[in-house]
Amino acid sequence: MQLYQTNFLTINLHENFIELIWTKESERAKAEDFKVWNNAIADMVEKHSPTCMLANCLNYFFTITPELQEWSVENVFNRFEKAGLKRLAMLMSTAFISQLSIEQFVEEANTSLITRYYDNESLAKDWLLK
Image: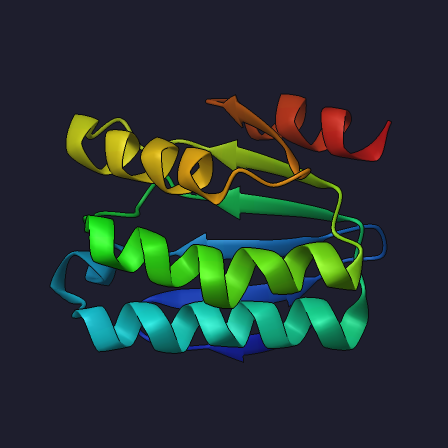
């Protein structure tokens, strides 16, 4: 079931996990867009209480600045933990800059959220659902 959609991101709810799918338009996003979509993600996690998330970053091209990383730790990842999110599988972009930005973003959060990186959606889903 689709929960949220913008030019940058679609959020879907499945029986066992929440799915984030970014579009190539993410390349044109601004810092405020980043904050809006991350608040929407946190809202959906709090509302639906999934224990797992699949983040499809194959078309994610927004570079996350250190300031936005810090903002995310304070405003998003803490909400994930409180809502009971346990596992995050990330399908990674082949674009080096965005991949590095995403990995730094998740590492900066320093939460109990178990995160694994994949280039294969089936493997990512298998890990989430086991």
